[in-house]
Image 1 (tube, helix red, strand yellow):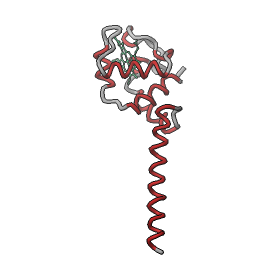
Image 2 (cartoon, protein in one colour):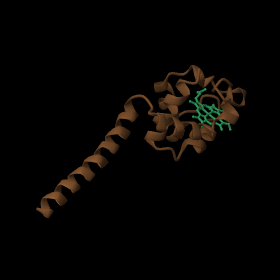
Image 3 (tube, helix red, strand yellow):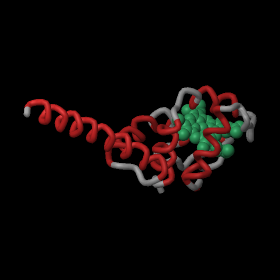
Image 4 (cartoon, protein in one colour):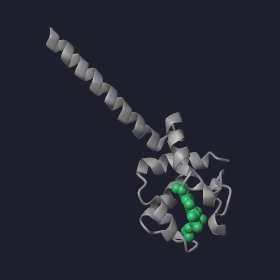
Length: 118
Ligand code: HEC
């Protein structure tokens, strides 16, 4: 009998873990959860001195105002900077240094967060 309980317990625990990773996957393609927004806000602290608190500034008087970007455009831009493939105002290398160690998940939640700032 004990064995059955043990098996049930293992199923329960692994079931919960699966749910967590599904939740994280969902946020990659969907809306940010409240926890995602807390993380994204923390990540955005790295950006606001140039892009502004509400992403309302032309960073270094060069960049576009990214508050007007759609989520997809932000993701596309950040991934291109990571690969060193975007250099619109001669500062692509600078952006590359800032976002180079971001995961896809971080880029996603950050893009969602920025696109909702205005
Ligand atoms: C030191 C100032 C600085 C910081 C900090 C910074 N950026 Fe930038 N950002 C720039 C500049 C300058 C450009 C223009 C780059 C180029 O030449 O393509 C830019 C471009 C961008 C673009 C594309 C806009 C365009 O004009 O093509 C996005 C999106 C962006 N940054 C997001 C971010 C995010 C997200 C962060 C924080 C993780 C961040 N930036 C941090 C200065 C900064």
